[in-house]
Length: 487
Image 1 (cartoon, rainbow, N blue to C red):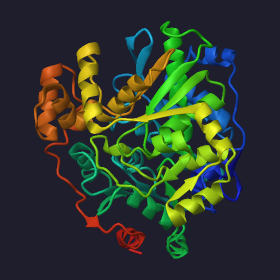
Image 2: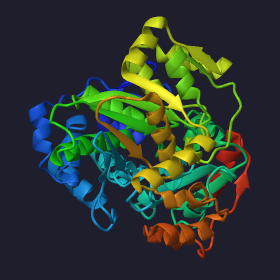
Image 3: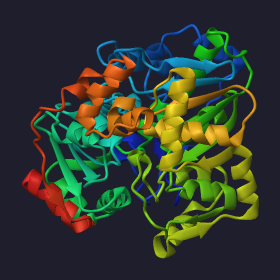
Image 4: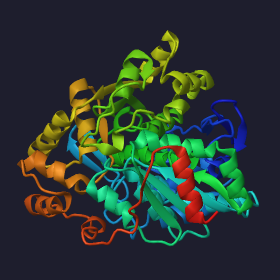
């Protein structure tokens, strides 16, 4: 299978797309065509373990990797020692609504599904391409990608990884997850800006020829752990198939019946994986895009106008505090837009607008809504009181949007993080107590009886290794990386 970049339509193999992370034209790689799964294929997947499903599904997108090779990767990535309470369990709320829990991995967020796999995919891709250079992984994070990437890559072969996060723009737990990271091959910098600034800076470094030449002379090459890298998205497609199969196996859904998915999203990667699963034959009905108060995606899906020139709002769901949604470029290409022109408009004017015909295609596949902090915190209390279900601030956004849209049929809400990652807000929602994150973890556990992940409780007294705060422009980010590498 070949991959095509969204701007100048450059072709690539899947393994090379994973190595490069981003196209030479600045575009993002997408499959030239989607593999197709029949109902019979999905029935066959229903009898497999998560690791076996993942290997078979990923192989259809990346046939350069054998099923046997991929099974080695997936068994290691999704084993009991990494996913301690099931891999992607489905929790029933009522006859028509369930929750897909994606937070039982080592960093308690959905990013683990991709970033426990990406190092293996990348290492194998280098071998397949006879590439002996050292990977330098750069990642911008709004909170969860950073820790998941650090956990996936630390002490991984000869690779190095550097993460940039917005200073003051994450929860205390998210920050300490990153700043206490072990490993000699890792570094973490806070930037005096928001996630969009961090993401813009990383993208600029990928286009900085002097920077790339300096790395090349020292035997490094640049790649990404953000969802701009195809190696991340391909792993995320799997859990939509898994959720569907699990609901059928538990008689919550008839095989072939359409399932609506409701996804809290900021950078549009998680929800795009659901669209790709649908494009490959999974019976998905409505795809609901749930935004927080930074509701640029809601406005875009409802109007066709993407306008990033708006106030940036810090919310209780910080992983979604994003105004430049990178993966939307992939969707626009797949729906037939000239993404090169649209992305140029975004770069020069901060906005773009799609045609009326494109808007119809967009709305044929997606519905959208948003929730304020007040609304999402109320949703946490409602879900806990009515269903005895405890959800984090991001999942609550999706729950509120789902409730507002009054969608018929069977639906599943994608839960992207443990409620203990945002314990202060979750505790405040259900009990009106105002505590710091780590005190809130203890109190939340006491009130609910729900165990807190050991990986989070252990952070409170762990010493921070990385305390540097740098400017938000790419020049300072570049200098930080080069100084770290002693180049």
